[in-house]
Length: 57
Image 1 (cartoon, helix red, strand yellow):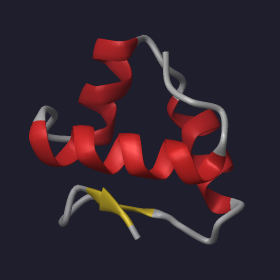
Image 2 (cartoon, rainbow, N blue to C red):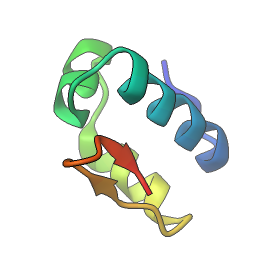
Image 3 (cartoon, one colour):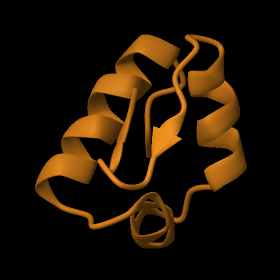
Image 4 (tube, rainbow, N blue to C red):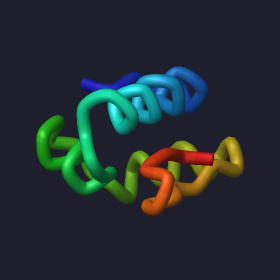
């Protein structure tokens, strides 16, 4: 389960994308998480997913 706090979520998701998963869709499928929920939470911090860099920035 991923953290609900946006700052913690950003750190965990970007680390997992860097170290374990080739895409946000792959991460969501493996962790049974909803991509729109992650994107909405991180949008609160003005972060969007960049598929070419495979990270939120």
